[in-house]
Image (cartoon, rainbow over all chains, first blue to last red; front, side, top):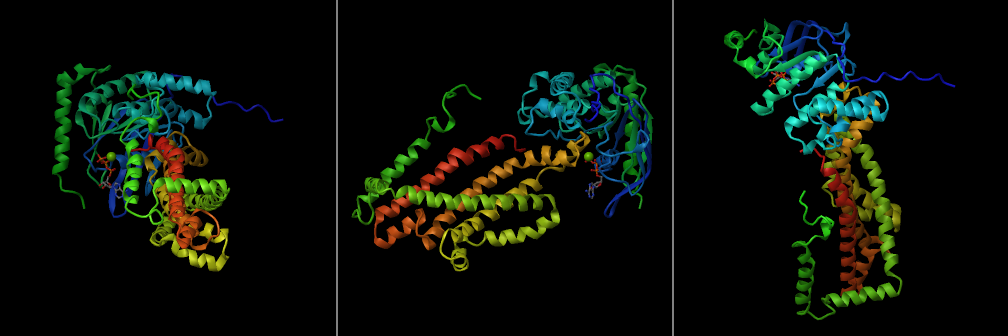
Length: 272
Length: 257
Ligand SMILES: Nc1ncnc2c1ncn2[C@@H]1O[C@H](COP(=O)(O)OP(=O)(O)OP(=O)(O)O)[C@@H](O)[C@H]1O
Ligand SMILES: [Mg+2]
């Protein structure tokens, strides 16, 4: 007889172990188009890191490198000190578009990762999925199919689906860029609320300065390709942040600094 | 969803669609009244002809002969199209190789192969089944191939970051994501196979609905020809509305727009 298989532990809605990310001296190019040269950056455990850059500067490319979908030509990407790969259990990715599975209900979408990992019984998986849907305010939509949900709701289901696996790091690629301004502000606040509860490391990508300021502990400004980090800003705005945060004089001050930096970058002649 | 008409299945609800068949019959009657019955018989003559065939026990024989060939060719084409279409959808090199061949064969009307298959396989079921297979397999392959190729890289990447391994990807993402294309392919394949079947039977069969139509023409029995045509239409319509359209609609709902 086989010895009893140790069952993978069933996670609960609790703080994940935050991961750390290190990008070391990475070069990357698409055929005939260099994107990064000597890029290095670090995300500290539990940090909310925002990467800010204009369209086409390589933000999605960087996130795909961070997730291990593409390998750098040289240099290393380390997640908790081991080379990253997309299936890494500590890695969570919220894509630019929701990427829900259209044949699965919201609940089954959120349960997908738990099911693949075989964590817990079906009842436990469903309970955890419901908990995470409730976390993003969508417990009522559990049985709806993705096409029955609005774009904002779909993106929240996608967030819940990623969070259900309790990733130590959350990669978010302009997850709210396609949404209207009101929904986006609401989801920004929701993201911060969830993050303050779960405290993963977050790497969040955006081209919106206000969104970056509102969310970040630290902002890295990406230089136009081929390049790397052009500037770094520590955002010492008090937490918890809310609508009033945007009215602070400090907020306006940061915005002015970051805008000036980006304007400078646009003016520089492109490196050969 | 509105609450009206909830008690009725969609195809039973009142609508303009219910007028089309009576209008067709009326048009037929009007036109037929201008010709002698042995040239263009009215609907009741055709019904009487059907009754005669039924009583002689020969109608079922023709139907079964045709349906058997249809199923054999269609099932074989489905299996081949699923294998080739899936591989071509997954691997771009193979897709580039298969696509021109598919396009070439789809441009040729399938009956054109009938004389050749009759020479190779002799008169009999096999020659006709091969024609049906040829008629169905190319459009089905193309449909499945496009469906599999269109599975978005995003869905695959999402599944991978959620921890799915290769086998789980195939089973939990590729398979369900290609079901809409598969049901569409079944629908297209069945109707293409049916058209080819009738045409091939008119050339090289001694039984079946196509043979019935061809024989009617040779002996100058217009009612028999029209009976055959009506049966062809009714069978195709039944398969379409009872089976394939429903399958298709079921999966259309979650096909990404
Ligand atoms: N598959 C590819 N092959 C070749 N070049 C590519 C490919 N994907 C992106 N690029 C190029 O690499 C650069 C960076 O693209 P990337 O998608 O990372 O930009 P981005 O910062 O995410 O832009 P956006 O804000 O519009 O999403 C762009 O100039 C783009 O044209
Ligand atoms: Mg992008």
